[in-house]
Image 1 (cartoon, rainbow, N blue to C red):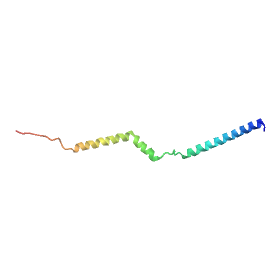
Image 2 (image 1 turned 30 degrees about the vertical axis):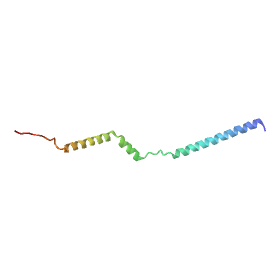
Image 3 (image 1 turned 90 degrees about the horizontal axis):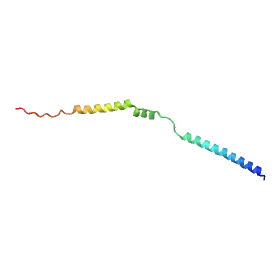
Image 4 (image 1 turned 90 degrees about the vertical axis):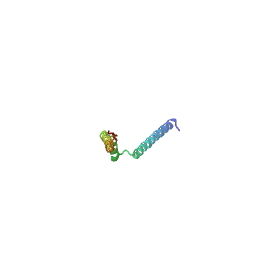
Length: 85
């Protein structure tokens, strides 16, 4: 066996292994990327918009304040003590 032919054989084998490794890595990435769920769900978007909307937050706080005022208005008047002579 010739030294030149053995070097060529090793070089060919290394190229073949490199191509095979590239194919395996590429196919693995394709399979992994297909498993990921990158879809945007409408309900998630609506929930996020409702949670982060400053106008809705202000309306909720305003409603909370108005219910507290209603409870105070329903309370009895302060007792008055009087004395006549």
